[in-house]
Image (cartoon, rainbow, N blue to C red):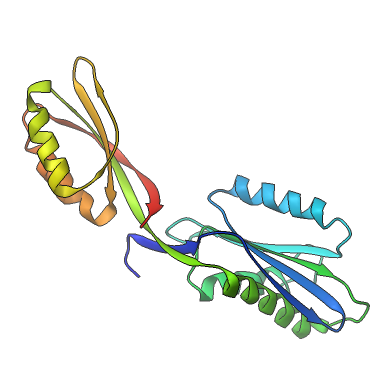
Length: 207
């Protein structure tokens, strides 16, 4: 996988797995922040208030370093971890998988639970559309108006997305481009007279 691309899912998807009368309803959801995760988990806990367990796992960020698994009362490591394992094995991020369990009266045992949560999560991901996104960076530049044509020529040739532009005392322009292409863009812009570059921030967008 390239350093400036990552995989996520396009839209929510559902999978269902039944074992010894226990029903596992899995939903895979695209998320961007921990706040998104909390909001979804709370709404599912309300929606499935009569379910025995509402377990989940999530992975966030293009670097895939922010993640969590929650067993919600199931034996430790039998629910959240196998759900997270499915996110990992599919190399996905910005994904939350919630698995709701309705208990069927027959205990599944530790290994049975692991298989059930893993399979339910896999079913939801199998139903999802996986998309690739690019990790983009944003740069803001300031320059004097007479040099507008020089800047616009570089923008046209390098192809960044023009996020905003303003004409005050100076002209300002915010540009977004895929991370691997940013050094070249900056190098070219830096050669324009009077131009100043403000440090970039990272943004994410569809490929």
